[in-house]
Image (cartoon, rainbow, N blue to C red; front, side, top):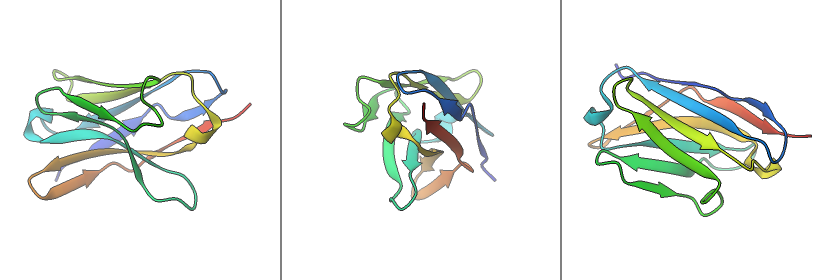
Length: 115
């Protein structure tokens, strides 16, 4: 059973920074894609950033230039560095991975940007 465990969420002031981590229970090379989605109350779950097995990345327009996805293959962990955080970034952030037709999700971690 694949497990994705997020950490690093919390409160941050607008303009501040936060780093999320997602530790996978197996090698991240076993997955086609890993990344982050987010869901604000009343909204759908939207893609934030993805990283492929070969290391290529993709970002939502709303976060491009402010957020950066990275990985540590030795630790089977991916990260989301969030800079210049805005109030509209407030959401539950979910770690994501896929392998073939199967999708895996973490339990989510709350990020709240508020002064």
